Each structure stands twice: as structure tokens, then as C-alpha cells.
Amino acid sequence: GRNIQVAGVAPTDDTFTVILPGPEDIDQDGPALVGDPDLGFSSLRQFGPTLIHHTQLKVRKEIRNSNFMLVDSPGMIDSPQQAATMDRGYDFQNVVKWFAERADVVLLFFDPDKPGTTGETLNILLHSLGGMDHKLLIVLNKADQFKKIHDFARAYGSLCWNLSKVIPRKDLPRIFTMCLPTSHSTGPAGVETKLPPPAGLADLHQTRNDVVAEVMKAPKRRIDNVITHLSDSVHQLHLHAVLQNHVRQRYRKNLWNHRAQLVVSSVMASALVSAAVYTHTPMHILGGTVSLSILGVGGLFWYNALQLEATEQTMLTTEELSLIFRREFSKEVVNDADEYIASVWQRIREPLQLSLESIGLERLPHVSTFELEHLQNILEKEIPELRRLASPTHYGKKFNTGE
Image (tube, rainbow, N blue to C red; front, side):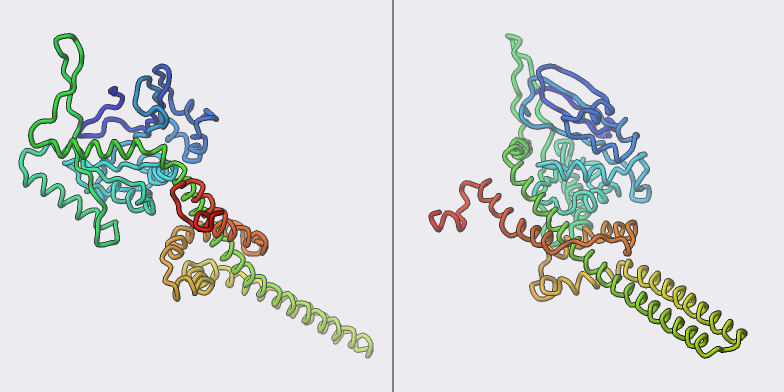
């Protein structure tokens, strides 16, 4: 291996570093990295220029990751009272989420002196890495720095305690306890040899080997992660479309009711004025009748506009949207106790609310039945078929029937 990134007790840089294998050593700054159309980082522009200038690319030859890239994020050093969304000059939580969603393996490192006690770390675990347990490895690194066993026990217990605050279940995930690799020594012939691990640290080095093995499996997990991401995205899109149609239908029902009232009142006002003209009503009475008709129709129009605005504001509240979700998916949520659908709703609730507010309920597009059925077909048929193609050892219906 090669020394590419500097490690230390304190954070050693403040940039996202992308490490790629290549024929020669090349360093590029953030604008060049984000501007390259072939590397896939162009959408990082949405997070602003500060992030771009805190991103860099390192191309290195003779490294083991010959068929995948590594991304090293900045360290987290804040206290819970100082945690803020934009204290780095960009939205750090969503940037980490952006990288994590596209990664095949995510390593979250904790150091002995800060075992999960920073507020930013806990926020990242809760908001940026939520729903990624299948590819998240939690690592307590540099455990060889402990001089006494009770110091290690205190740090490990503190890490478990802090993780329990953001992982809402009784059983915590495995914590990989490891250390930095053993240094090399130069033999008499000038050849570098790897020193054996010191006594008592063999378990830490074995755990480190386990973590490296998981990282090296990343290319094999790529297809599974892409299919998982596709399935998750289609579930979110389907749920978003169903709820949007429901909100649109309810709003337009109120809208047409108000329009019908306006049409009826206009017809009645016109009939009243026509009757007054037909019966040769005196001009001062006829004028009053016309004025009252106009005021009545205009007042009803104004009242209906206020009612529609109030209806829209009510339907866009979190409570009302949650109620609509429970009505539309009562079978899955109540009868079947489908926690996955509930988790999808938790993730799309805020984006759905923002989308409805920005578009406006009167301008909401209609999602056709054909489009909804197509999404359902993707979930029920096409994605399972992709799973079968990606897993040769899968003994599903196709193999059991001898097809």
C-alpha cells in the first residue's frame, strides 16, 4: 500500500478527498473535479461554491483499489451546542448524505478521545446515514492508543451510549474495534517488511483485516446497491404520486363547488335583473337591483377565494398530509403494520410538502392511472426480475418451475 491520506488524533484537513487509481499521480482541485463530466460529481454544484473549493481529487498509481474510488470526508469536531446546518459554509449533512447514497460501503470512524460525543456526528448518523444500515460499518479506530483496559471500556461504553440516542432499537450494530496498521521496517537488503502486530493487538489487526475485506467487496455489492436504490426511489415516487393525486382531487372538488356556486349566483342575479327590466321597474329600483347583484356575486367570489386559500393552507399542514397518508394506505399501515411504507412516508413527507407549496394546489399536474400502474409493475415484476438476474444462486419461481 501507499501513504495517501494523513491520519491523526485531530482532523487533518477540511475537504472531501476523492481517491482514484490511475497510471500516474495527479492532483486536481474541486472545480476541475466537479467540472469533469465523466466522474459523476457535477451535481455537487447544487451545494454551492464553498463545497466545490473544499473538494479535491487524488489520482494515485500502485494502490489496491484498482476498480473503485474512495472518498474521505472532513472530520467532525463540534460540540452539541455548536452544531448548525451551515457552520461550514455549506450544508454538510446533505453533502454527506449525497455521497453516502452513492457509496457501496460507508465507514463511520470514531476516535478514542471523541467516541460519538460531537453533536455533528450524531446528526450525521441520524439524518444523513438513516436507512443505510445495510452498508454502514461503525469503526472505533486507534484503539491501540489506550494505556489501560478501563480507559478502553469507558470509551467503548460512551460510544454505545451515544449511538443508542440516535439508533432507535435495543440491539446496536457491530462496532469494529481496530487500530492503525503496523509500520514497516527496512531489512538488510533494503526490502520493506511488515512488522508483526505487537502482543495483545492481534484482535485489533484481525478486525482491521475484516473491515478491509468488506471494503474490497464494494464492486461486488454495486449491482445489489443500485437495485436497492432503484426500488427505494420507485417506492418514494409511487407514494408521492398517490398522495399528490389525492390532494389534487380534494382541492379541485372544493374548487369546482365554489365555481358552481358562483355560476348559480350569477345566473340568479342575471334573472333578477332581467325580470326587473321586463316588468319596467323604475330606474332607481333597477339600478339598486343591478348594484346588489354585482355586490352579491363579487362578495361570493371574494368569500370563496378566502375559503379556497384557507383550504389550501389546511391541506398543506403536516398533520393533514399525515392524515391523508393514513387514509390512503390504511391497509398497509394499520392492517399489515408495514413499517417500510411508514419509513418511506417519513422520508418524503417534507419534500412532498415543499413540492405542493411551491407548485400550488391549483396547478398540480395529474398522475394518470397508467403511470401509477407502470410504477406498480416496476415494483412487483421488474425489480424482482433484476434481483434474479443479479443473483445467480437465487432459487426463485423461475428456477423452481424449470423455465
